[in-house]
Image 1 (cartoon, rainbow, N blue to C red):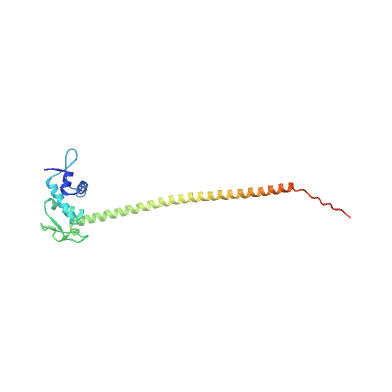
Image 2: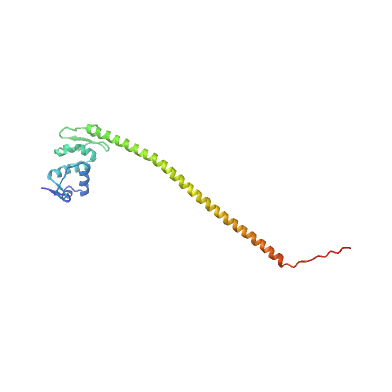
Amino acid sequence: MRYIISDASKRLNVEPHVLRYWEEELELDITRNELGHRYYSEEDIMVLENIKALKDQGFQLKAIKMLLPSLEKGEEFTHIGNKGEDIVENTGSEWVGQEIKDSPVANIQDNKFQKFQEIMEDMFKKNLESNNDILTEDISEKVIKQMDYLLRMQEEKEEQRFKKFDETIREFQKMRQEAAISKPKKFKLFFLK
């Protein structure tokens, strides 16, 4: 019996995108037809039911991925840890009372994660430093352009103000000349004695 993704998702009571996500994250080997459509076998459904049960108990996909070989064998696990710690019990005594974090697989994954984190931090730091130089140049160039623009605007305003002041002075002088021309001149005669 084979199920298409919509039937499998209904049977498991999850959305189809969840099944696709689990397949990708847990690297599940789900068979596909010649058109590339997923077909779930009864065994796949059982594994997915166990994954769903572990997710419902609070397991993270990282922990489930480590338990996947045992899940495929049909072993059952129960979550007995507090929030933030994954302690599992296995009926096959493989993981009884042991923290997953202390398992060899988890240590390898932690080391890989730490190396990945260090690489990412180095890349981020180098990018930030190189971009910092570029940003500094870009910002200083923009600030210089803005200051130049503001200075030109201020000079233009002062130029206009001085032109208006000059025009006012010329008008005042012209009015004085016109007033002087239109006024009759009085002559004073001085007689000598």
